Image (cartoon, rainbow, N blue to C red; front, top):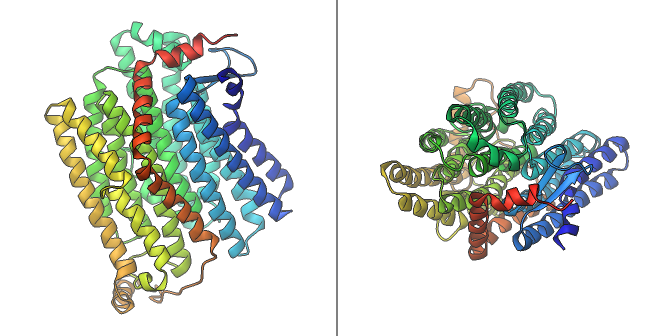
Length: 520
């Protein structure tokens, strides 16, 4: 059975690319068909991803070799528990965001441009995300990153405003720097081992001199750290993400940084299971938590505040990886899944607020709890989830990491546990402050804030106008919020799956055997 299902592994990558090509050929015509193609494509990808997850969890890793060329010559895609789990969640998230973007385009009567440009770029980016999760060799992972860059740059600069072009330039420069480091690491790796297949590298790296292993590991980690916005390579993110359209910002926050985190998890578990870099990763995780959450506390713009919380919570995932234990890896996997949905939900809600009021500055907002109670709830629930309020999945993920840190022992893991708890409290303060100002306080108090801000920023109109929202927009966000809440209801099975994925990662043998001993 698993052999027949292996042919489905390439579907989440190839289907969005095919759909993007069809949509480019159609252009701005047949608007309803354009929307239908996008939604059906992502819906089918979600269905296939669920099938792959069940099969990988039941039968072990599934492998497909594009073009019939076996590893390490051909392009190998591998679907194991980790890759299929994050693929299912990312597919669900991108489907909800696509519904949001379609509804938003129709509401604003901007049919042609979004469907002729935005949607194909979105589908190309989705294909890049899937390719990164399923890639079985480092060069194909590099190709996946370039797919991400090409699609995400179009999304980030969509509309061609000055701020978006400037942010796009910053984003592209950082992405190119990461790509150059990645290429250098690929050259060194191939020169030292004669292969870029992850399965073969898992067998050959141990025979290399320690200095060569360390050079390759640090170079790859630096490249992936830029993608994941890990401190100190995170300064570009708060200036880039908030400028993009709401659907693009939400996907960037939920998925693109997680591709970098996923790559680090795969790298450390499969190629460098033990090594001296673990201590460095712990210090980096600590700095990422602190720098991100302090930046979040200082913000008065909702999008920028969420961007900084995104950075700080990447630190939790790096902490789990740095522990190099099954418990720590399971906590990191669980937290990745949780964070994808929660962060995407919050950025979409910020988009709803901006569309409703024309601003995301919390000093200019107020009274939204009474005016739009649904939006207030849609922000409050994932905000509390992000902060780690019991019994939500954010609390459960942090609890897994805290237990793993205490089990590891030592003063540095204990320090990280303490820092993680403090970061969680400061996150609660930041999101509660934003919610209180934007939703809870009275419009009269908000008007005072508007006047004060307009005095500081000469020429800004202190008046906040409001517009109605089509029902499909909050409903698509509500679906994501419910998905995030389902992780709490299904915490037992999800935790068990994360633990099985962690054990499979650290065992390495199931992955290597599935690729190299696959029947030809």
